[in-house]
Amino acid sequence: MLWSEKYRNEFVDGYDEGYAEGYAKGYAEGYAEGYAEGFARGMELAYRLASDGRGNELFEAEGNPEKLRSLLEEYGLS
Image 1 (cartoon, rainbow, N blue to C red):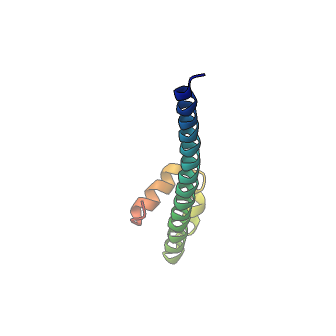
Image 2 (image 1 turned 90 degrees about the vertical axis):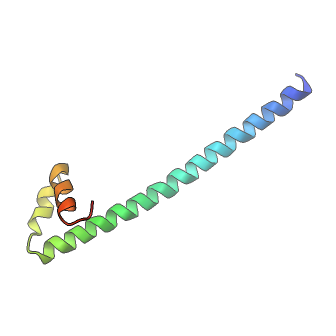
Image 3 (image 1 turned 60 degrees about the vertical axis):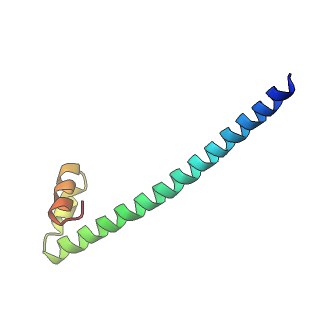
């Protein structure tokens, strides 16, 4: 192995490790942020529906993505 190949390989290995670590960290942070945002929107929707006497619609929307999307849009939470 040539001297330059050794260092090139070390550089590539370091780059790959750094990339994988950065990707994993970014994914985890993005997932946590998205989960928290979605949970907050869901709780706000549940509160507003209950306040309007329409809490049963939340149960209808549980298995129906289109119904959920329409309720979120109706309450300005989309």
